[in-house]
Length: 319
Ligand code: AVI
Image 1: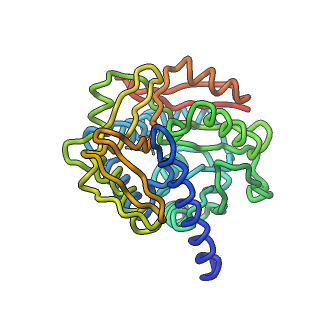
Image 2: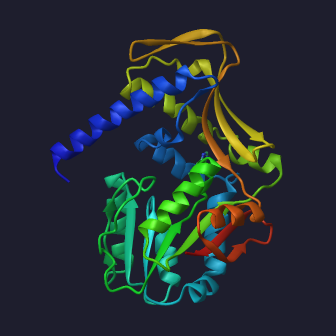
Image 3: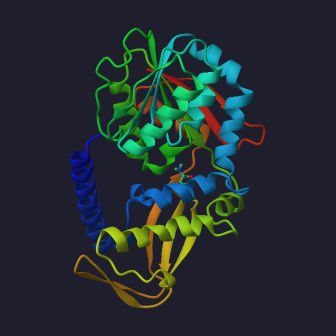
């Protein structure tokens, strides 16, 4: 990617961040979109979260993929081109590709070129003969694979990690519909979804005693200070994870510890003591609800795998 292209992309990103911050902080309640949690420091902190003892989703999904790998591979069949939405480091792709029979290609899709390069390099190193074709695209919008997986019989979409839970349910349906449209007719989708469970387990997973999740959440304010002309005093906010039982989701909030005001790009925002900024929702699904969600987006659930404690689920859907 050229230096000029990177600079333009960075400018457009800074403008979008500022616009989202101004809109979200002007609302009641105050909100910020969770996608802005993932700058370089946010990605590093998220990686650290995935290794915390309290954060069960990553290791549980990895265990399901490990223990049911053969069964999953049998259900998928040979020669699939794997299209991964948001590949992260590519570690889960390496695990999946290792289980599949003769995968035809690996196509990671992400707007973040740095992630794509890292994932593509990791997969290429693990499978030197495999066709690896990164696709720079925002997978929350429609995109075109433009024959990049030519020669493969089927497309297998891969969306692990319960990232589906970070969408509002309506957005999740819209994403699943778009994914279906982007993949070849008859495609399948392997989808990771976190399950509803006891509030205490969920709250510990999103408010760990080591404070890594708190640092991840507060880093959003540091990012706004760096990139959007804000002057947040990070010590005036406290991280909070709340289980919303009605909406079956964990919410991350940043709660103001005192009445004060903050400037963002020359706009003043007033905070009452105890007022929060809602920064992320992580929806948890009961199997029936996930099934209905997939069906309303035109996918037919073929099979679900889970762990013995019923913490997490991995679904194979067919279009
Ligand atoms: C990326 N996503 C699936 C994570 C989740 O569990 O919702 C993000 C996260 N937020 C706090 N901890 C992890």
